[in-house]
Each structure stands twice: as structure tokens, then as C-alpha cells.
Length: 237
Ligand code: GLP
Image 1 (cartoon, protein in one colour):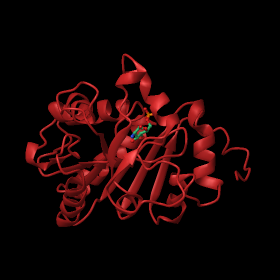
Image 2 (cartoon, rainbow, N blue to C red):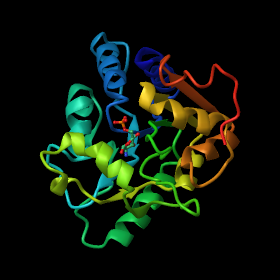
Image 3 (cartoon, helix red, strand yellow):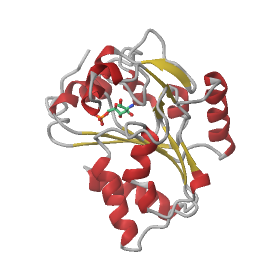
């Protein structure tokens, strides 16, 4: 799964060295980032002109906090490759004016000409980025209150439940949808239901990832466990 996904990203960068990548965090893309680093270290990939925009960041965590997505990206990818620091974009979880942070982030993505390839994971509840199940699809980069399921799922990275952030800044569904290509990764049995609903279920804001059924260029890369309910060819409502 990770090698396939890394190969798609590598191909994108080879075809367009100044690609704008949308990046995801979480457990799922960890080995994909390792694979990209490996390809880079072999001298087969050049990130010098690549620009990146991360999907989301927790509110209230400093960049240096080991649980922040900024720290994750630095450790898992950026410090190992030749990306220019000024080409890295991650929402600032400590911004004084959160709404301004959201609109500037959105504007900056637009300025670059838009995201060429967006990497996504999927939450157990079908979220993408931090677009949680809701009554509506939230369009642009916004402040989110995290779903209980997400908070519980993220608790594994923190020492106590009290420390788990309850809010984040996330790209919106429209922001993600505007990416020219989307590559979504999912592994493990816990993601099987969300994957099946995303692919075969109704397109509803209760399953934010289901909107991807309407996107013109999506590649979903799953391992056997995450894809197990797809094989049965069932409709998931
Ligand atoms: C997190 C992130 C998402 C990620 C998802 C799955 O909360 N905000 O971008 O895709 O949940 O995470 P994991 O890959 O750890 O299962």
C-alpha cells in the first residue's frame, strides 16, 4: 500500500517538479513517507521545487509539540528531504486570529495554482482531514470541533485523555475537492466500514469521504483488511 502510494507521488513530482502536494498525517501514511525518503536518498527524487499544504493541525499545540502535525511532518518527511522551508505550509494551530488563519491558508493554496495531488487518510467515522460527520459539508478551511470517535482514536498518541485536543483547523471539503488528483490510503480492519461506505454508500455529509465519489481523479489504495468489505460487492447505506 505504502509503496504504491509513494510511487504515485514520485511520478507526480517527476512529471511536474514544482508540484503542489496536499499532505496527510496519522499512522496510515507513515510508511509511505519512509518510502519517499528512501527514493529521495537513492537520488531519484527532487523536492526542491515542491510545495506542500497539510490538511490540518490541532488547535493549541505549539509547532515544537511532539504531538503537533508540524512536528510529525518534520520528523517523518521534511527533515530527510531537500524541500525548501518556505514551500512548507501547515495551518498554524496557535494563530491568534483563527478565522484569518483559515482564510489566508485558503488564499495561499489558490495563489500556488491549487493542489496537484492530495494525499488523504480516512477516519474510522469516514472523516477526511478533520472534516467530521455533520449535517452539511463544510466547504473551506475552517475551525472544527472534533468528533468523540476521533478524540478517542487520537488519544493513543497522548498520555491522558485530558491532553487530547478537541479542536483543529482543517481544509474543507471544497478545498480537498479542488485538488486535481486525490490519493486516499487506508489500512487495517478498523477502516473497512468507512472505506466501504465511502466507495459504495450514499454521498452524505455523515460520511464526509463519500463526496469523493464525485471527484474525477481519485485513487484509493487499501490493504486487504481495509478493503475486505469491498470484495463482497455490497451496497453500504
Ligand atoms: C486523523 C487526521 C486525518 C487522518 C485520520 C486517520 O485524525 N486528521 O488526516 O487521515 O485521522 O488517521 P490514522 O491514519 O492514524 O488512522
